[in-house]
Amino acid sequence: MTPEEVGARLGSLLAETDVTVGLSGGQTYARATVDVPPDSWRPALLAARDDTELACDFFDWLSAVDELADGFDVVAHLWSTTRRHGVLIRTRIPRSDARVRSVVDVFPGASWHERETYEMFGIEFDGHPDLKPLLLPPEFEGHPLRKEFVLASRVAKPWPGAKEPGESEAGGSRRQAMRPPGVPAPGEWGGA
View 1 (cartoon, rainbow, N blue to C red):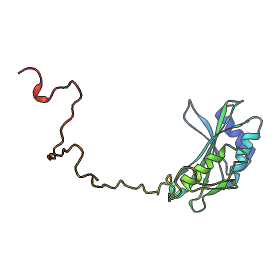
View 2 (view 1 turned 120 degrees about the vertical axis):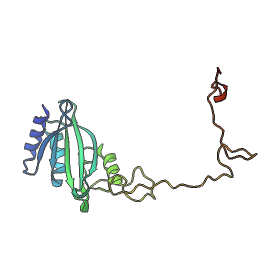
View 3 (view 1 turned 180 degrees about the horizontal axis):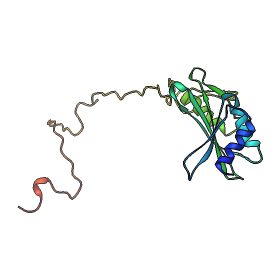
View 4 (view 1 turned 90 degrees about the vertical axis):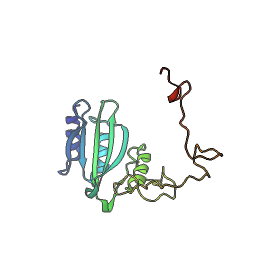
């Protein structure tokens, strides 16, 4: 199936007016992209997996995109190992209620991805069996992939030693330039 046919097929299976079908990835790597409302998130992944023409039996990845005031796009990529085509399924959820239904029971491989998306974006996956932090230390506060997350600036501290690196015990605060082996000092170049 062409990407256009994959998108049209999934769109017709969902039979909703809020479904948008398009292409992403350019000509050579184009794939169907299907945008669904949050209530159709899980049914869309089920339809892509269970339909015999689509047969998207391989869960590739799931993540999110912070769209600022528009909310978050939760994105999943599925692939058919028998039909050799893929589909990107997206849903947009509001910032004020960042939650969507878990698809771990549809694709068990989504568990790690949902946990990472929960931790990095703060998106809840209702029905996830073990939604707990995965990558960050327990004392970490915030969601680092949200665009409003402020990166901590590096704090400049004085050198903890008594002398700067390169200073000798005899004093003198000038560091000696280091040359690679075999390279003469500037005054030792051959010639006049």
